Length: 75
Image 1 (cartoon, rainbow, N blue to C red):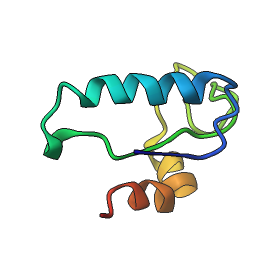
Image 2 (cartoon, rainbow, N blue to C red):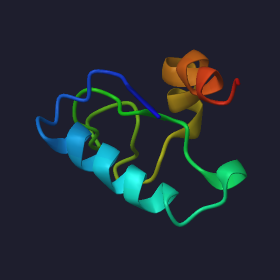
Image 3 (spheres, rainbow, N blue to C red):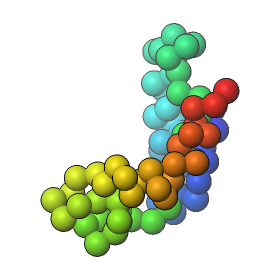
Image 4 (cartoon, rainbow, N blue to C red):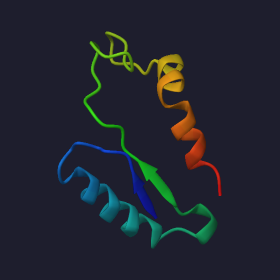
């Protein structure tokens, strides 16, 4: 497993890594999470990633993070 990105959440990256390790013990090899990326910064309605009603702006997320997300799905 690889934890990518800056995160910026302090101990959040470690907590996600531990939770992923625990979850992977219950999954078949093909189902296990191999790569994780946590975006840095906070997302809120004032950012481009969320609407005022806190829904994801998929187009903006794809424009900003598309290459990173594509990299998570390569072997």
